[in-house]
Length: 412
Image 1 (cartoon, one colour):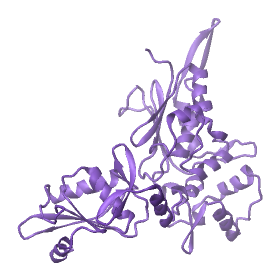
Image 2 (cartoon, rainbow, N blue to C red; image 1 turned 90 degrees about the horizontal axis):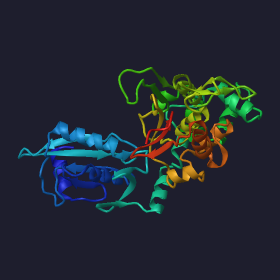
Image 3 (cartoon, rainbow, N blue to C red; image 1 turned 120 degrees about the vertical axis):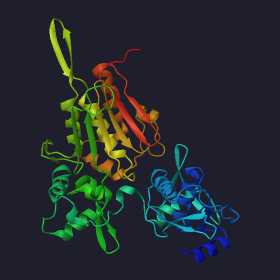
Image 4 (tube, helix red, strand yellow; image 1 turned 135 degrees about the vertical axis):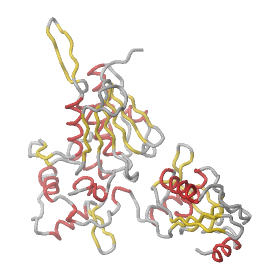
């Protein structure tokens, strides 16, 4: 955009695709305008221009302004974006920053941070306001986005999925007949009907869930698809570690007819990491020395499965974190709890809402997920009480959910 075009844009004033903004506003304010424009038809934000069109100029350097905008676009928006940045110097030396937002951005509805919440905003004329439930629903429909987990993953196809794991799931886990490996069309139709492939124009792409569960190399297209596991010697994070592993690959294991894992996936490998590093506890009982694992594996597995099944996969670049300390295990899942889910409901076992419904259902087929939403109550809370009489911590923070299991009772 040259100086003449910029001056003409300013002269025409704010409208449904043009917003004037100072560059010293609160980041949430800029994020609101970015989200609202993206949710309509894109547009442009001019930084350093007052509401009445008066040119005030940037209050910071070009580089600082660009970094500020990019940080907001990544940290204060869901999903994160990378806008086009440029700037123009006016005749009096004042600089205007230009933030350009595409009309066909695929991540609708975009949400902007407002305090501790994420809110969908829309553009109405020259103003931005919070979307109603119906308006947000229309955004999902217009973007053909029912759920993130069944979005098509670009540049993938049937060959991106592990045929051995697919045969194992349909043939061994579900006990149904499967097509011959060479019958690609029959497989494609089966996977389309199962939402593991999704039609995208003329092509059938792997869905997010399909790639996560059965992908040959999920992290190539979904870098957030994995677990970072670290065991620390003390009670705080430090540079020295006992063991660490970046766990990558498909979520589920290849299982035998008896249900034994013969080629382990991310979930089982993460549980194995905790099992080999958690240590044990010993005590005397009737003159005999007794020993058991520091944590019950049922509770460990449920914490890992919950993180995998319910994390927000739209938050890119952030692994699930499994952190083992001398006194506790922490399993940290990116993203807040899904709408309608609370910690209290999880404790009571009355949760019926899932962010990733397809993932949850397939994990249930494998026996990872308990029916009726009772896993947290039965496999975590009750298991920990029976094992060492401790109460697990279930903590919803600003942008993550933490399950904390204690190895022993804390001193009051």
